Amino acid sequence: MTDISMPFYTNHSALTDFFEFHHLMEKNQIVMTYAGEFSQSLTKTLLSFTEKKFSMEDVEDIVRRKIFNIMVELLQNISKNALDNGPESTEHSPVFMIGESKDCFLLISSNKISNEHIPPLQKRLDQVNSLDTEGLRQLYKQVRMNASFSKVGGAGIGIIDMARKSNHTIDYHFLPVDDHASMFSIQIKISKN
Amino acid sequence: MNVISIPATEDTPKISLDPENNIFEFSGRSLPEDVVSFYQPVLEWLDELEANPIDNMEIAFKLEYFNTASSKLILDILLKLNDIYLNDNPMKIKWYFMEMDVDLEEAGEEYSELIEMPFELVAY
Amino acid sequence: MKENVRHDLKYVSRFREHIYKNRIMLTYMGEISQEIILALLNMTEKKLDASHEDIGIKSKIFNVMVECLQNITYHNERNKYSRSSMFVISRNAGGYVIYSGNALQKLKAHELQEKLQRINDMTAPERKDFYLHWLQNRRIKGNPGAGLGLIDIARKTGSDLEFNFEEIDGEYVYFALKTVVKPKTWSKHYD
Image (cartoon, rainbow over all chains, first blue to last red):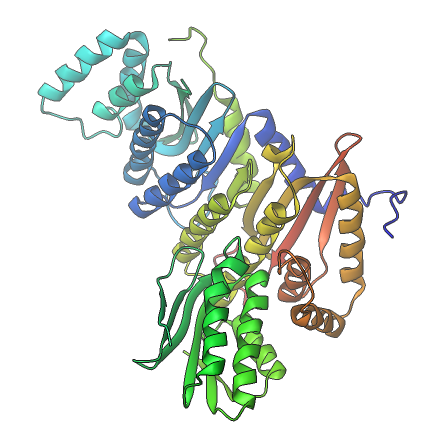
């Protein structure tokens, strides 16, 4: 018979890192993190993960679609513009995360970009954050009609699209890593209803 | 004899048991949640086979990996085939594994120790 | 629904630091289901293929992952801590490190601990015997895989099982398992 009076074996040292990360994930309500090489084929794999996760919960179709669209945008941006996006792990390898709270989903990406991309990117982000639904719609139309899509990563129509779908402020941060590049982190919130 | 033709899925193997075309093959991955239900038709087919044995069958296993629950069912399949073999029906098993896949090779070796019929390990 | 407060996303830096320090490839926290297991396998496979990992290692990693994660779904009913189940895969110079964690009822945790210690006390030939004996046991009802997963992990990694139990509350205990899959030859992919 099992001896239930015996104390549990607690060997923290072997699993300290695990528990630290567990705590980090729980505290920040993060459900999944992926670090490594981002590509079109990985985008499909991550979308498929999200689909499977949703199949366990009651997520409205419209919310599902928003999340997929935003994910594609974020992931394609990483694939196209991230530096250090290779199979070898570096301090600045791109990271993608999904968070979930009671009321909303969070999509987070963090990747290294060239500093020259920052001004138009920041401008665009501040712009979309300052506009309401109608303002965003107008901006979208305007940028669409103006056929010269900026080649600079993420400063084009993608951000406007994400802002429209998210309907929340887009949180972002640039952290310089050296003279030429910075880590660009972005967090997009989507309400569950 | 019926034909069993089950296409592969993300967690279940492709299974072809086709007497007419002389194809008897298990390939892919096996990790279903409910192994018993998945392999039930195969076990039933083997019961049928016992009553109507086929001459000189060659059954191929080309599995990439399988969970421990599946390993039990695979043994059940091999034991049923073994019973038929011991009833004077020559047949053989071909166990395929990728060259570097030690675990799959070992699994094959362990199965071969548990049954009497000819069991060939094939690296590719 | 625009918020005025902007967050500086400090937590993202903390995540990145931890991810790099431990060379974490993939983590998941939440309920474990068959669907999630398959998705995690897919994502891991992508990562392994990108590093041109050899089939022997890949196969071991998949086996360990499947047994760890299916153990969580097989043996436990959903409980209030199901969303705290966790999976991590990372790689370092020692090999691939796989962690899984989930909450168990106290009695089950005690039984599991006994089992783990028994397995750790066995020699390799004893583990093989145990495995073959269980494999051939025709009298097991219910899930045929029950009981084999842990011994399979121990055999495939050739090492003892490293684990930890932590009491959550009076009723539940959090069980964490660490498994290392070592490549046979040292490769420059691992720094």
